[in-house]
Image (tube, rainbow, N blue to C red; front, side, top):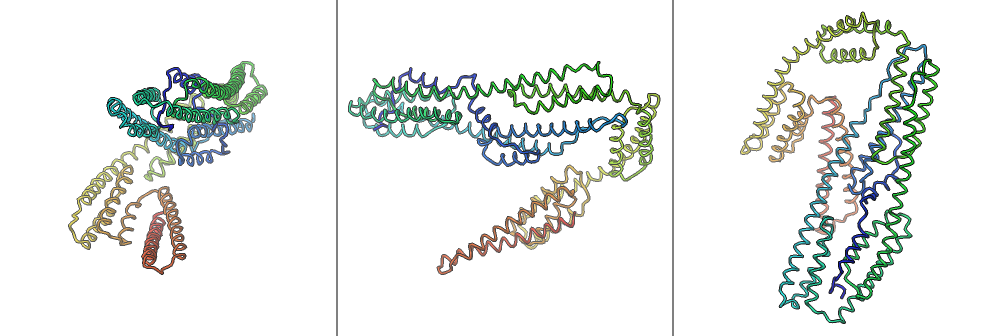
Length: 609
């Protein structure tokens, strides 16, 4: 009879319950707790590509499982990147000698960062969708609970028939409890309203004392069990898991009705005392984490101050610079041994330290440049670049020569200063040769662009023709007409590069619609449309498409093998068995056709590579 009287919880008990459940605003939230625990337990890969691969695998899991993990992996990626940068730079500085010509240190290009950004963007979109769905579900649940409360209110208003409608009210109670996860801002008010309606209804019923006593007894047993469970949580080693388990126990407590009035205060005090102990351990856990972060913060500030306190005025010899360089490198090594400071300041401290280190090595580079007479060799190098640029300026091999010109310009930037009296003239000589070539290229490209624009208009017209294809034509006539359209499309030259992929994709899509509508399974027709879609593609995209087809082939081959294995275990002794076997044989035949088509597509790609 526990469900007969769901509860009469006084206002003081509700307030105390909320005070135990709600975490103080100064504490770390449960979301942050999950991230911190993941931070402690997460095993970081040793290389940047492994970090990206782990991120990509994590994105495939549920958002709720990887909250915090993605951000930590991203930070670890950039930490590895910085370590590579620091090692490369340290090795470069160490390898330099007084006799060698000094050139600025060039930061290695991060060829994986775009892949990392794409993965992070994918995760953000997935997370945003997940959060939106969760919020939408909570709002829907809130509306359902409110609807149940409205029905309860109507039953209470029908005082004359309240005894007859007792069963209906019980069903509403069960329905109310079955609806979970509503917006946090509405939990308290919805629950108080529910408690009020329950109290009003059962007061109207005037349930006899024996029934109430039985209800109180069952509720006491349940609440005693919850007290025992809460007390055991104080022995749980994982304080975060214990805190989450406590929240679930509080949710269960809310669902249990009242006990005898004489026992209400004592049973509640027992449960509250157990909850207080779990919350205390939870709070202490994060206070310990904050203490370690504070210790790391103070150590990092001290390192920053040492790096910023370098007196450059005293560094007047190579030996002095090398000695100070060792000190800076030792500070960098010490930095790596320290743990994380608090999230809000850790990045700031890193930027501060990096700025101090960068300033030191910049000053060192400037000193080396000042004491070495490299102007003459720089002038000779730039004169050689001028001669190469002048030899290329009349070339009409636009793409190849453009790459060479850009390479010359990059090489020019790497060369240091020249004597002031030659600076303007050598620059004008070089830039004149480059400008002459690029002006000629611009004129040639203008004519090419006009031709590509005309080709674009022609292909758009064909695409519109295909979209308005006469669907009343006979299948054979329609297939002939489609082949004619494909031939006409292939006869047209290049279109603007940025429009090519989108246009080919649209054309292939429209062809597939017509092929599917006419049920054309002709392999050559399919391949003709596919060849149109890949014609003119760059080698990178073609290799990517080929790899995708190879994976598809392996997947279909595996599926076929599974069907063949299953077929070997079946018996054709019954009519039903015969039908099932025929269906499996049909599927195997279809898989064979798909594999043949994939092989043909791979051969087409190989011809275009």
